[in-house]
Image (cartoon, rainbow, N blue to C red):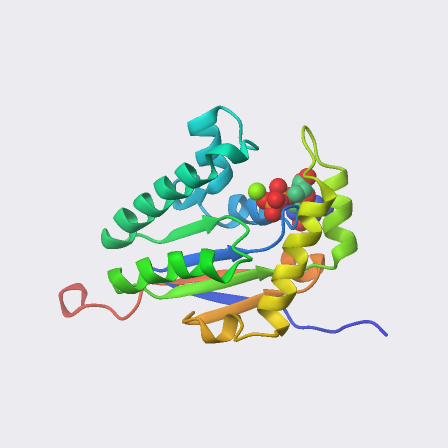
Length: 189
Ligand code: GDP
Ligand code: MG
């Protein structure tokens, strides 16, 4: 039976922290490029490239996230919307982002690319110039499943102001993102 889901609308307060969540190959970077300006997106792969010359170099992961977290803090304190493009399938990875949003007094929103495993694996296999090892993708998918369905406390308890889960490519294609600048200040009237 076909699904008849309505179009998903995501309303982003400004400023906010937008946390993309999904396995490698789920389409996070594509999604970020489609909906956000390049300067709004902090990508763990991009920091690996800056530090090691190679966005796949896992040996600089720690340094890459240290830089990403530092820049995230600066941006949120400056009051600018920021998107984090990393897998974020681990609770500890999300906690490191959420704590910075909380400190800056900025709401955190999650956008989950929970696509069927077969699609994620096929996209990864077709990926050029590099594919990620399939065992890594399976690990990401398992951790995402656990974050969404348990066992354990799960994404819903972590402190996100809103969580949007996209389940298939059609939903991802059709999603509408609106920015909410909030109430006008008296000076703007
Ligand atoms: P990430 O690892 O989550 O950042 O995933 P990417 O955005 O790099 O996408 C992984 C692969 O899937 C790339 O080859 C993309 O071109 C492809 N891809 C991503 N999003 C879409 C989509 O909406 N439709 C199609 N057909 N391919 C996509
Ligand atoms: Mg990516």
